[in-house]
Each structure stands twice: as structure tokens, then as C-alpha cells.
Image (cartoon, rainbow, N blue to C red):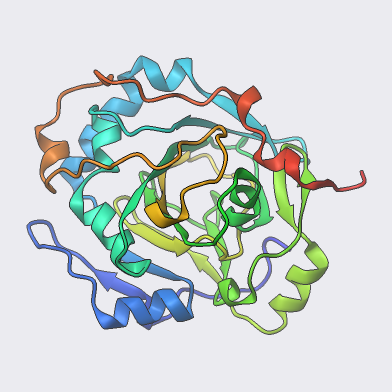
Length: 299
């Protein structure tokens, strides 16, 4: 179902942001999140913040030492590094800024949220794999999170285009509720028959993003991304939040409720740490069992 005809996000889902502003969640943003399933904030990270983030990606030993791949079932692999606690290094601070956390929290209804995990997605040119149609809650449902009161912030580090595998979403699909998922390669994929039926009712949006743009989206929003067949890499930071009230009922490979220490919006610019002074609990791929809780795809 990837690479079908689709359009751009509607105007009512896109909101500009300028450095130095305080990001206020408006009623229009809440309406877009509840109706479209997402909100696209243009320029959430400034060029100076992106310089710091890219420096950390390129030089932090944590990224290289903890990276692993996910097979897309079609011969390609995308690399990622995942951490469960944000820490106090540059990449961790990025997910603790008020403009990130409080925006997600307000869009989710205003109740206290905590850091569920962050991942650096590394989809390299010519080799980066696809991510099949799925809902994030298709994974997290198996982790003891009883309600779909969770959200992800996708922060583009590089340009995200159709050519290098930008996100594709079925606008409004979060309103369909959780869809049955099966295991595809080492991913959890939504039942494609159900996705195909929804695709006849809902618009397909290609979420092309400039570096620094951020997509806040509901955990039941159906999304995918194609293989990166371009020469350009497509890196992104994805920070997931869960409500404190939705604390998982059992321990698993992501944290149960842990209070989140917010930092000011200029914290990344002031931070010089490439590694955290606190334990970030980096993901061991053998411990990531979310996708194994689904039925096999039969192949």
C-alpha cells in the first residue's frame, strides 16, 4: 500500500513556529489532532538546535554502540538507536524541552505524561528499509498499556521527502481504533485488508518535512514509510509519550511511569554533553518483544 497516490497535509493540520516564541497549543491544533490524527509544527527545532543535534548524532559513541536494524521483510534494513530514559545529554534534552513535552501533553488532553522512549531512526540512502503500515499502539498494546492514550513526536533531522521515504499517513485513521497486527519481518504490521478498506474512505497524506519540523501524532494513526531509494539519508528523532494514568500493568522493555523533568526551550543550545550522566537504558534488540506479540504473517 505504500507509494499510492496521495497529497499533502491539509492547511488545518500545519502550524508555523518561530525561534524565541512560546509554543501555545490552540483549539485549532487540538481539533486537528482529534480529527486528522496529527499536527505538523513547522520549524520546532531551530537551525542552531539542529547543528547541536547533528553534532551529537555524528560524535556520540552511544549512537553507534547501541544501533541495530529492523528488517522490513523486503530485503532492506533501517537502523535505529533507542533509549528509554531521556538523560541529560544533547539528544536526551531534546525530548525534555517544554515545547516538545507540553505540546504533546496538551494535545493528548492535558493530563501528565512521561517519557516512554526515544529513538533515532537512521534510514540511509539506497539501503534504508521501509516501515510497513502500522499503528504505534499495535506494538504498545502488547506492553501492558491498556488505553491508546499515547503519542509520538517525529522530529525531522534531515529533509523528509517522497524520494527518501517520508511518512505516509491515513488521515483520521486513529478514529478506527486499534487494528489487528501481524508480524512482518521484525515489524508489527496492520492487517492490510483493513488498511485497504480504510484507504477507500480516508485521504493518504505524504508528510514531507524540512529539518526541524515536528509531527505530533496519535498512537492509533496508521502510518508507514517507503524504502529510501535516494542518495540522501533520512534521519529523525521520535519521542514517544504515555500518560501517567495509563501506566503499563506489567514491566517490559520500556519504562513504567517515571516523572519527567522538563527543561527550558533553550536547553539544547546550552547543553554540551554527548553522553548522559544518568542511565538512559538503551534498548537491546533482543529485549524488544512488542512485535512478537502479534500473529505471524504466514510467510
